[in-house]
Image 1 (cartoon, rainbow, N blue to C red):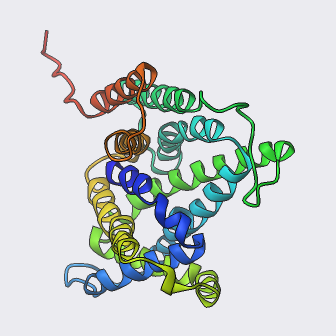
Image 2 (image 1 turned 90 degrees about the horizontal axis):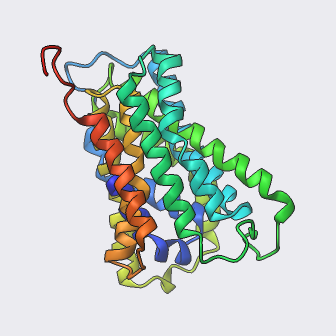
Length: 297
């Protein structure tokens, strides 16, 4: 999640240079090349059954394809502050889905960690949105005012929250049957297949000669980080951590994005931002610190 926040913050030049669907297509293509040797089935894994194939498709559809569509179009219709506050619900939604679909128990410590994560992200989103004029000044991609569609933008952003939560819960189920490397490679292939029609159309109309060598290098980093490194780390962790507890770590996405903004992009950080980071990290400590033994005093 820290790496996700970092590459999201550093990918701003890519979003400005490439159409969104073309960028996604290139990302999945880079991932497919990098993980081709992860596709063969290891000797200790059973062949894919119908249920596992279905879960792999759903993992990619919700976590790769639909999440991006909901988030990008949602943010274009609502304010950044509203989107940030809504995204603060990810840890809670992951915990509730883990309870509903995996039967995981929500402990008191996990509940407190979720509350800290939500409060920290909400405070961070609110504090970063203070310089803006009206909080609801959403604009569409073409620049038209869309105040009357802010409700739709908020709904789409919450749809992205549900997709992210489904990604965590389905991933937890998949780690019981497949290794992290093979899961990463297979869901990346599904993502490539889903976005190929849109990416190929965008590529047909795009001038690749205008892309600088620096942007190509950044694109390779983005493709490897988004499709390979982060997915493998997430799936490896899910093998040993309950989905509800893992959901707390989504707090590191906005935290690391803010830190990269300050350290690499020169953005200011005030007392409210520091307080938000402190609250968020307190939630991570609550979720991960060893529980005291029954005989501890």
